[in-house]
Length: 287
Image (cartoon, rainbow, N blue to C red; front, top):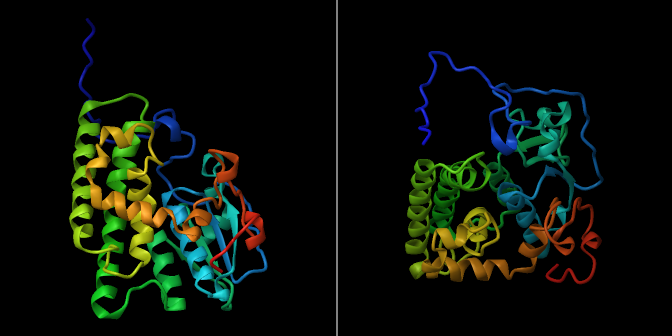
């Protein structure tokens, strides 16, 4: 029986380009552009550069919700950024988001165009811009921001922690999977308790907090994210989260938004780029 030697950290860490599992080709310890590539520009007020990851669909769902609510000024072009091919390290994208992470937004209604990056910042920027989906009154608005920032601080434990070691790591390791599974279940319990006596996260109003949290935790409990994770985490036991997630998933704008910049799954769920409502085909009711 071969014993595995415990890992002993070196005095100074050095980058092993081959170590990193599914993302070894794109992860690196330095910032900045690796190649020159200008970003495309469309005709609409907002230019979105993204991919349909949980952070990416936050923004497309909000933009579709704004359009459905009658805010014509929220029209947008959504351009695909293929992070597997390193598009996020092109010079144009780095100029919009120096952190080289999707999503990134350009507001072309101002001169010069204004960049907005970090998904939570984009949600807040757009919600304030159109005075929508922030809650009704000071109490709900405060709760909305409480939970928006909760999501931004909590999701790395779900995605970079549990999701990475459960799905993407080169080998299954008991300690990190158990560590992050426990934390994700604690977070689901936090949400379940919050939703026990209110329709939405901040109260009776549907807000950007719901959009941000649903994109990660709603997809998880509806078994739309990591394969086998829903059963492993016993997500069915969180009845209030299940109820809330299903209600949001049924919204037409959510169904449209989660398709944008998607390049995997059934063909009917994919819309590589979005430049008009007509790109969806069929009925786009709720506008």
